[in-house]
Image 1 (tube, one colour):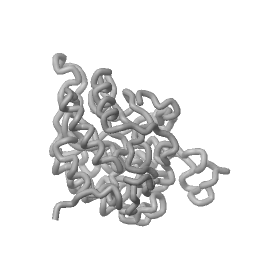
Image 2 (tube, rainbow, N blue to C red):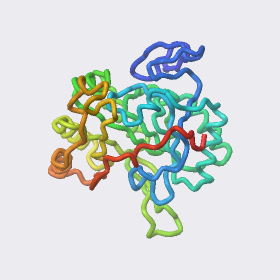
Image 3 (cartoon, rainbow, N blue to C red):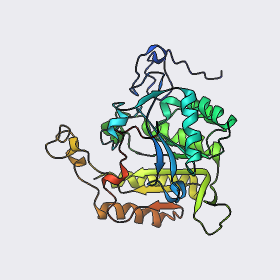
Image 4 (spheres, helix red, strand yellow):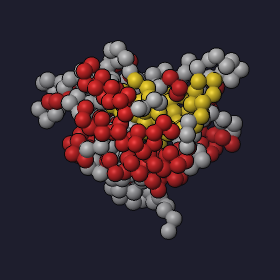
Length: 317
């Protein structure tokens, strides 16, 4: 039987909370059936083949089905900021990003808005939106929901946060994360296949390359979790080889509540520091030893606020 989304009893994400979002009840994601956007602007801090020189046309959606304790965008993930907009306005934002010269439309934390996003993409394309669409999520997805995006998304940019169910339960209250993420990534890859690149300016071949189609899987190395990080890298390489790109990130920054004296520090004291160079290098060296060739890594001191946009101004919404 074909799966159909029912906003009166939401099962859009793996939480399957059953909230009557259609009538204003907020689900585990923190949102009802309206669209809430916290920021829409060019973003320069994605992977080079996503941002390029002109920037990625990011749309940061409010709320999140996952709710990780270490979230670096907690204000938006907790739906504390965001402007309510219509499908028509979202479509207009996509067109405005194209007019700004964006390399793509980058949908950030979009899981709980999949039906509305699909409608907005259809509408914007009817009105001349031609940019590739990037689906930028935490990886906690249902295959049935992702299939609503088949043919609409060009680049999938999911996280693969954990291979350990224990860590997933401890930090995201989602013991089933690894299983859902594996299935979701398989569906994403089925839709977009191997990577395709073009010059950022098609008339100037020496410009940097922009991904037009394909999948980049991000993994954020957490303090004290290098064994699980290695397990993530091994799974991705064993499953997809060089048909996808990995993005191994060292930018973990403890939010104030996780620092000594913060309200969560006593529960998760191990998360109250940045990742050490030794920890990060161990994961990167492991990837190299496995034979991973298609990967982005971060060098230098990147654990800083420049990766965390300001959501207070509701830019571009």
